[in-house]
Image (cartoon, rainbow, N blue to C red; front, side):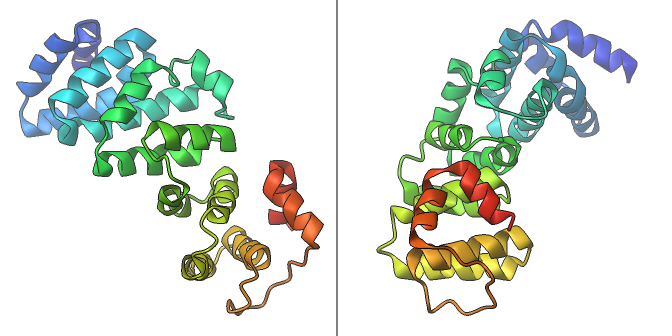
Length: 233
């Protein structure tokens, strides 16, 4: 194992040579080296080398390498700071032109893999929105399936805001409430309660304790801190 790490580290400054080496491995060796790359080696290389390797492997065979590369990206993100916000992400080289190029190249399957992994790590609605936009999701209705999959406060807040732009689709609002209630955790149930109040969904039945005045509802939608306070009620 140590020999593998030393050899791969020597090749990280030459992405094409690294690719040739990886492609020469047996299936079991490939799995072993992929694990090393995703969990250890790519976490520590320079920003430039990381993105050169990322793009070389991804564009050669995205199906084979994307899982490993996303794992490495997560390792680098989590090494920055417990709070993954814009300034830290930019200084680390995560929010840069290379990342934007990657996002533009994603197909639907790739995008889902990336988003369900990265969205839970982001601590700011601004960064969640930025990631969704970078991945080509320009319409609010397109955000909803991804935001529903992630149980984080920033994603819950943006889900509320995204639904406001499609509020004429009452059936979608009701389905969203039922999905959240079925999930059953306190955050999801509180969000369903808030949606019911915000959109006047009397058809949604349940035991709801949340009660807000119209002016409070407006403030919750416009102020993330107020939203958090209500969600933790």
